[in-house]
Length: 287
Image (tube, rainbow, N blue to C red):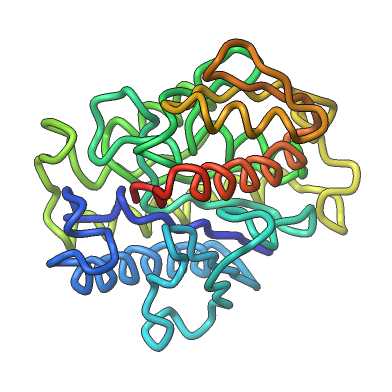
């Protein structure tokens, strides 16, 4: 069993504020420790359920958050940026399961640190006219690559968002949103146990599916492999006006662009969108 972990930070145990998750934030170093231990809990659960290879992709902001010397010794770590596939770098059909650790709900929801990729710039996103954030986009892309998402940890809003996309995914709520920067926290030991147990259950379910040998070959990749339409509404019309210079990108209105293609292609192209937006606005992603 080959297991892939995408690790974000806003949905990590105990973290509720930008100061917890942003470089140079007052509590960022402590946040890194908390993120690392949430990931380690997921790795332990995956290994207990029979994983023979675990790859962890540091998927938050600079993508240099996890403490490399404290990540579980049986996990391979992907760290740093730029990465062509960002939060899903190195995911391919050779994996059997995806675990999403520390994820958050999309822009516009009342979830802890909710946003969609660039909190300052992205107002909303849609896949085939369905509102989407980082959870849904990752789920669609992984599915198109032939790998099921089987587990997610984050706040209750993130868990509910994943359940709306796929109610077979095992979720582990580690906190309960009171507002965007406030939550009722599960005790740390209890939250980590929930992550470990959810990871083990998710990987066990994936193993029971008895995928064909060789990973994604023959696996039902889902609609995202054939083609989808991604639309992104920006705060700045300047960003949209620049993006329509990319072949295949068209405008819905002055601030909304859209493009169609297979989900993995859209996921990679969206990384280009964010780099253009950062250049035009001088704004780095919120978190």
